[in-house]
Image 1 (cartoon, rainbow, N blue to C red):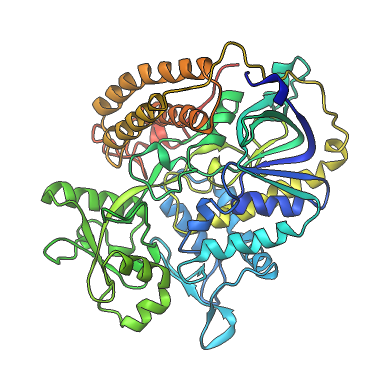
Image 2: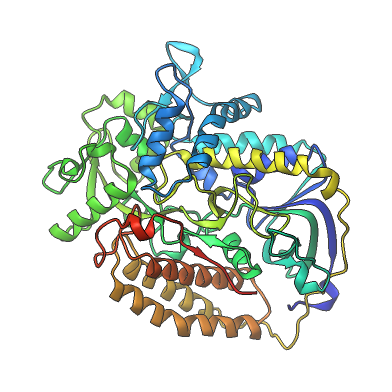
Length: 545
């Protein structure tokens, strides 16, 4: 624990929320009814995966839909690993949570022929139209609506460009008491400010909603913030993590030398887009009877297979058979962005490749969003709630985020008489020790690049025992080097993030090595079949404390 002595500060709050996506903002707004909230975000508050989400939020909102259909679609996508009680709870809570978003001002797109009803999209794996959307800027609409409410709430303080380093755990301070069913009590976190100050933020309740870990891979649809911070911190603190081998690769990321991580929404295929090869031949019916509306794991592997067989750099997504006016109106952001790269999607197919998109695993929680560490919650992409199983159904992520934010709030409200009486014990300050300022940033960038390339080449869409063993062997010296950097140098955001992606890379590889089968998003050519007898269960890792 290191910093400059003169910078040490101590802050106290009822709720510490780490992350400013849909789940963090939703929880903060509700928690503020009971106490003060400090919400920290390591970049600007709009720099979230929520803000980039194009498709929308899945919920049963149409007369021809039903909870049972949505539940069955989710279970089928999850490849046998979904927790059915969680799936039922989330699906049945969905309509109410969407109505809440509408009530706070989120402007979902309405049907032209009936302005009282939402226009509902359809995406891969869904048997009905049930995606509430704001055309192809749904995440931005939700994020903006929530941020507007947060901005006017006097009990919520948002701190931008503040990065959580590690969680404060009671046993490490000498005051923690082990409680039945919990490893220990979380007291808050150490936080790095923009000026280099490292402060102690103590809280009665700490919430992790830092998003995913797409930046562990060389190619990703994720924003630069997606470095797995919440999962890494929780694991180091003693929390259980689960199912990290299930990394969802989005099938259709724009393939263009100037485009950085631009996602082509699942909704394009939902509206009739077809995947074709270089010769213009549609190929998805060879792989799945659902064709282009198969789930993401199936589509991503199909594209990977087509590219490896043909040697082509990409495949193509073709929606040119639809009227140009429809395409421009339904996908204004995708249309304009592609046009800026010289591609007119109304006249020519879009070149696409798979890219790392979503972590189905994360901090293992119960149905109320609680981790195994007392007073530490996790939700959103940071968590493994049991909803997604081995493969997330499209647009269930935003649904999960708002539902579990509400679940956690309900749990905190029920426990508030106890929580409100928790004190703020004296905890160790962060001390510098012999650490010095890092002068050669190449030490960080080189390791960062090594990890991302290794993960892409060895732990991608298709895996093997040999590849996994090789990458684990190659990661060991890198992890040791990063650990030495962490001891030798004063902390910077880049060094903290490097430590976290290294941690996540190692956990993903460990999880993938354990699962001796192919299921959902995890495909190992040495074990190509599903093994329900031994592996119809979560892969759980924890750090002995």
